[in-house]
Picture (cartoon, one colour):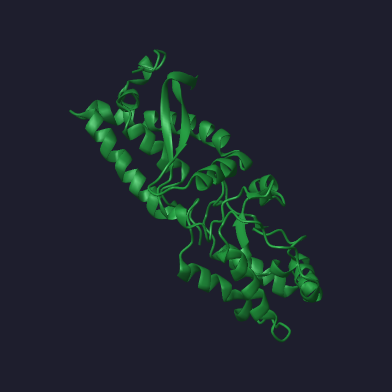
Length: 287
């Protein structure tokens, strides 16, 4: 359902929200409308305003029942989770490293029990990211986690990788830094993305993958380029093809797309990928 750090489309959300009805969950009179209205109030707020108050007293009984039902091994709870996994992406939408094996509550169920089974509040993710996020959604009065369903700025290509030619991660791999920018960006949105990356330790994850991917590409292209009269053109074409494939599956914010973007605008990295393996001991050319 979700691509990596990509806002879900409205059709996905409608299908996801219908799961409760399809599985036959019954609610007390007026409960479903009250639940939808309360969540809509949260979503329609200016994204960085004061968070919702915790579950109001008149909703507490039903809310606690929802929370208990989510935690049980009853058939409904099992079926709901199974269906969520079935329409989920093959990779965790937070980190993009492993498959989802748990379900995160955007608004934590301990404070917002009424949303324990409300599907627009549920994001399938890996256990490591669920642990990193924990119950934190706001910090010091500000939101610190991106909402993958409702943050519209994610429709833009807003995350970029900039290679730092005068620094290195080790074994000929250059260091890099993230840049967060897009047309009509607002300072608070940029700060939100930075805080989100910090919470999920995405810089450390990408640093390792950057090194792994560069050497993987080198292993592929250094052999193929020997048989091509214009190896740099060949490498660029192959990278662009892989970029389009990955973007169609996971969106342009997936790690591999970010890495390919960085490689394509750096001539030294392209040259590195064409360099024969026996010359790898030499330092990667720097600009």
